Length: 307
Image (tube, helix red, strand yellow):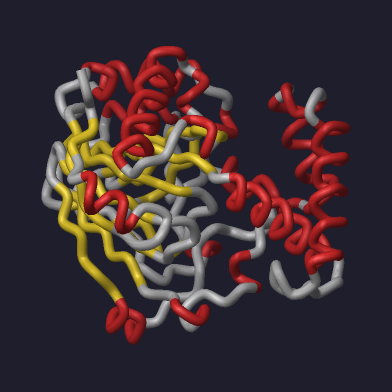
């Protein structure tokens, strides 16, 4: 049975280009019950779960985000009263969630006239948020369909033509840099509001700025993400640019120096091959991030602090 509901003409016209809304048939799936999500959280490594207070401003500074002194599974159990925001990352590693995720991404791409070989790196991120919670202004480095499961969610996407809101420098990737980006209320002149209820979804293309808020009840949603070959290439360059900038070497945007871009892609791939065996260990992942990017590289693990 199909789980994606979308007008193929709309998908063909907008896919990989601009946001649009669609629907899905996963709102009643038992994989999204709180009890099942508690089980999922318990099975995940610590660096795959991030959570903090959901009562934050759209443009909050990373250092000003209140933390929550509670275990991840307890946050989920008390989500109706915890005033929390949580993301469980890389749920594709759980067989049940992975099967659902791959089906969804395949059907969405097929509706837009694309086939399995046109994308890779299918990943899933589940968000569990209390009522009136805010996900601050940021960008995502993959193609993304956010599906709403429980409660209401309000997604504001922004026209960033000419990089007038988020600069190319702010699109660089670095584990030492928080995902939140600079925000000003004047940005809202370039925003589009997408109201999501259970069964609704919104497609958000690569690097489109957005911020999100929840309604009067707790919310469960899931980001179904994937990467095209071009996105993978751009991310390799942007990671190398962010890494070099971390060490004081400012870089040109992708496409400005094609030969140097090609060298960065090769260097990235060589480093990935060398580090991949080590990154299978959670402890070694933390150590490697810290060695390369400093103490801020593991900022998302600092969840158990007083509020």
